Amino acid sequence: MRIMLAGTVGMWLLASADMTSVDFWQDKEFRNWSGPQVEKMLADSPWAKKVTIVTGRIREEALGGFEAGGAGLGGRDAGARSPDDAGFQGLRRVTVTVAWIGALPIRQAMLRRQIGLAAPIPAEQERRLMEDDPFYVLAVVGLPLRSARNFGTIDEARSRTTLKPNKKEPLAPADIRVFPDGGQALRIEFRFPRTAAIVPDDKEVVFTTKLGDVGITKKFRLADMIVRGELRL
Image 1: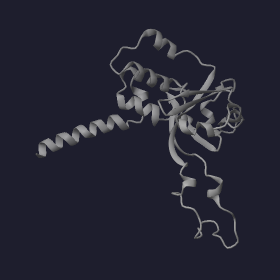
Image 2: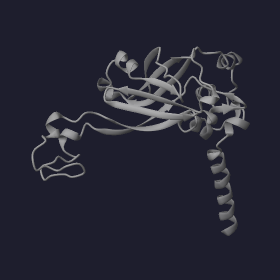
Image 3: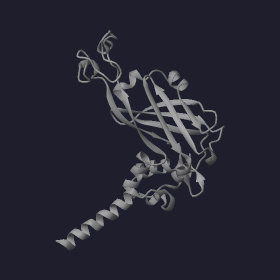
Image 4: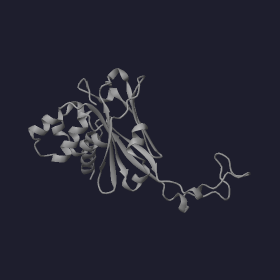
């Protein structure tokens, strides 16, 4: 029993090392990425970060009024509404992913997932991976479709979205595109012109958008996004 247990623990440690290797994209060709590594690149890597948002709206009658003698900040009077009341039930906490989907490591992972882990990569598709894109393309992935009506218009989103390198003027999106992302979700892509280059000396870059009442902000550390000496955005 002890020998079998030791063997099981050893296999678990090897699997864990494969899952948690921080720099597998540095020393392993994407053709050889494992399934867990592909998913890590797309969901939890220097190019893809999770953000928790709150969607939905509180009905006006659920807010009540500001009456004398009511509870102040941090307090709650006897007549205050519970989050379980009907007026609050439209509110939902949702985890979305902000990803640099135009960055080479993300595109490699998407291609590897699309064609399958064991399938050879067609030369034409691999060639297209290396083509220059005139835009930095970021996406918010996993937005609930049922909340889309509260996200406002494309023009409103464009005016409330920036990509800001450290100590530089923010970039504004040249284009915003919306795509289905599975049956009940949306993917919104933001395309920023590369005319103002982001470089390693910028240290970090912050993506900010506001979709209706939903604000999303995520910071990315550029040193973590360098692959074999080249910043991959």
